[in-house]
Length: 398
Image 1: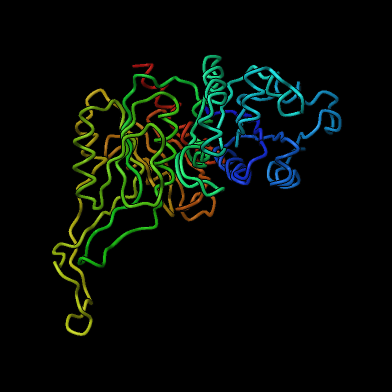
Image 2: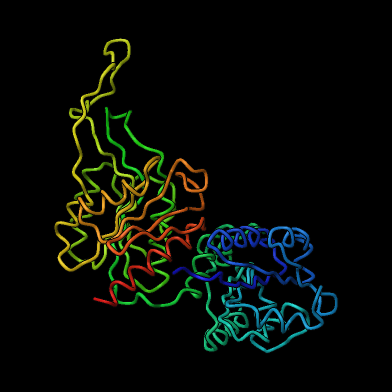
C-alpha cells in the first residue's frame, strides 16, 4: 500500500510574488511530491534560479539550450510531470498560453504538457480586470486549465483589488487535488485532530503536545480523493484543508459530543486526536490566585472514551483509532484494537524524533485483525494516503 511520489512541474513567471513559489515548492515536497522548476528570464530577476535548484535538488530550466542532461528540456519536463503549476502566472504568460505562443523555455514546456495544468494568477488589479486578460482566462478554462485565485487585497504596487496571488496553502492544496485519485467519492469521512484543553480555571488548562498535523493531513487527503469530510478539531493553529467542513472544540467532552453527533452521517471515523484521558473534576470559574489558593493538587476525573463509544455505535461502519505510545508500541496497539473494537489502530512511537508530536513525518504500524504492517518513515501526506488506502480497500470489500 502507499502512494508513489507524484511529480510536479513548477513554472515560475516574472512577478513580485515569485518568492512565494519557493514556499509552494516546499509545501509540495512536504506532501511527498518531487518538484522540478522552469522559469522565465524575468522571474530570475526576482528569485535566482540557484535558489530553486537548491530547494528542488534538480536543475532549473531557464533556456531551451543549456539544460543539463537533455537537448530537449521542454519535452522531457512535459512528459515527466503529473501536473504543472504556474505560479505566479502573469498576464503576459496567460496570454501566451491562450494563443499557443511558445517563445521561451517555460511557455514551450507548457505548450507540450498533456498533464493537468493549474494556474495561479498574480498581477495588478487593472491588468486582471482588463478585457483581454478575462478573455484569455475564459479560453484557458474552456480548455480545461484549472485556476486558483487570484485573491483580493492590497497589492505590491499599493492598489487594492483582485490580482493578489492565492495563499501558499491554497495553491498547494489545489495542486494536490489534481494529483489525487478520486477513489473516495461518495464516502463520508469523519476525522478528529489535535489536542484538547481541560480547564483548571478560565486561564489555566491541562493539555498535551499534539499539533493536529496528522489528523489535518488525513482530512486533506480524504477531501482531495473525493470524500465528504468533516473535521472535529481541538485547539490548533492549522488552516482548514480545502473542501473540509470543520467543527472547532476545546475540551474532551466537547470533542466527544461533536464526534458522536457527526458520526450519524458518516461512513468512516478516523480518531487521530490526542484526547485527554482526565479532566479537572471541578474547574474554577475565576482565575485561582497563588497568593490565596495554593494549587498543590487537582482532583481529576476520567473523560468519556470517544473511540470506544464510536465503536459501540458503528454497526457496519469503520472506525480507525490511533495509539501514540512511548513503549511497548505494538502490545498497546493490539490491546486498544481488541478492547475498544476498532477496525484498525494506527500505532506510532512518539518518543522517536521522526514520529513525535509536531513532526512533518511519521513512522507508523497498521494493526488490525489481519496482523501488523510496519511502514517506513514517510511524510504525513503519504501516511494519510496509506491509511485511506486501507479504508478504501476495506469499504470496497464490504
